[in-house]
Image (cartoon, rainbow, N blue to C red; front, side, top):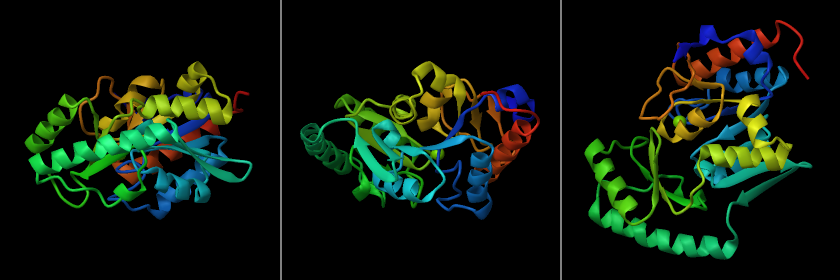
Length: 265
Ligand SMILES: [Mg+2]
């Protein structure tokens, strides 16, 4: 990983957009700071298209895409896309209604098995707004010991589920999309960007293991200082400051570099 100061003006000016995680990247303990919110407007003014990429529910994405200066949101770790076209906000599941009903039914069985075996696991406060997955709180309102998390992950995997961990939540799902595949799909469908262009034209910033697919999938990636968890490919650059302060630091760097000369078409 290189320091953010190593980022070149050429790379910053070649970008068409910035993809960003929410918890512990843009947000601090779930809160949005004034400086981080302002940074989104400065980034957009510099010509970057902004997309939220989060493990949070599609119900959150539906609200945030209506209010924030963003093009769309990849929610539930890639399974559900939210975008705004012609002034309307649309929530799109990756599977049809019948299949989603079937998956939700069998997911409920798995969740009840997990809760019986691991009484330390409790549902997150946002679970009612999720379409595709179920999330347990491991670090938002309570801390679950690492060995319990590991045994729960193994159990869910042994049932054929996919398990994703962020800094605060443990997600279980039957869906196979991840943050990177969901993002490439959204950029293609919403902005007409093909998969290769998306990889090189859009940068990503995140903080934890559920960001691993984006750190591996995109060419220009940033980790905030509080980066944690195991990932196959680390981000290329790291900010000096953590979470929201690191996001603001990144936005200032990108805007300053992009203002140094004309942007490529
Ligand atoms: Mg995060």
